[in-house]
Image (tube, rainbow, N blue to C red; front, side, top):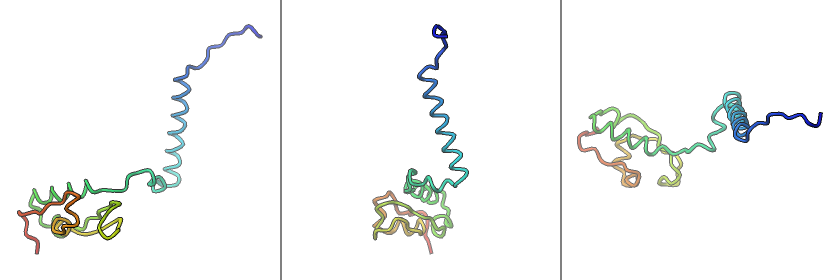
Length: 112
């Protein structure tokens, strides 16, 4: 019994098994309790998305998307100490407080 030899698991196999179990646990917890609980580790700002959407609305001459569609801008350092502001691209592009985020005026669209 003392002289029996067995094949051991390599270190990389053990690491992969542990990572697989952790991934499975995160997936089970996410689907069971909801993905909102993991939002602490997910970045919350969407400045690039909103700026890009506004630039696309301007370049495609989409009056509704630029002048009327409400967009929610989330960032840690918004004017007035807010964490979230909901308004139109026209508001963000004409208000100088938001120019530091990359919003620029759209000369091709005139909003009412």
